[in-house]
Image (cartoon, rainbow, N blue to C red):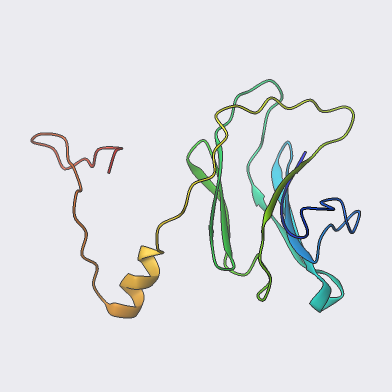
Length: 150
């Protein structure tokens, strides 16, 4: 199964075939790694590729999340970061399609699907400004552990 972020037209979401749209990035979970690649018309096809170590097991449930900001894509599985790609999305394109691609042998079950707006990259702000001010961080009573809601 592939997860794809694509810059394309909604009237023809299959345009381009194997590398759909004008640009995109593909993430393919496997048994031991998650492989990724990106492409664009401006670079005349595929540009970069790589992999991250994480094994998806058949029959197991996973919470998969993508965090996207400008060109950067982070992929998480069960709250563990498995990919952090600062230049995954090629600049100059509007990525407007999230596509699932499977083979006839795969029947994924997807539930609790949502797309949410991301917050600014606080790490970058800390690096560029040298400080970070935050409000609403909650701790357990008499403990230094931050609550998950924060």
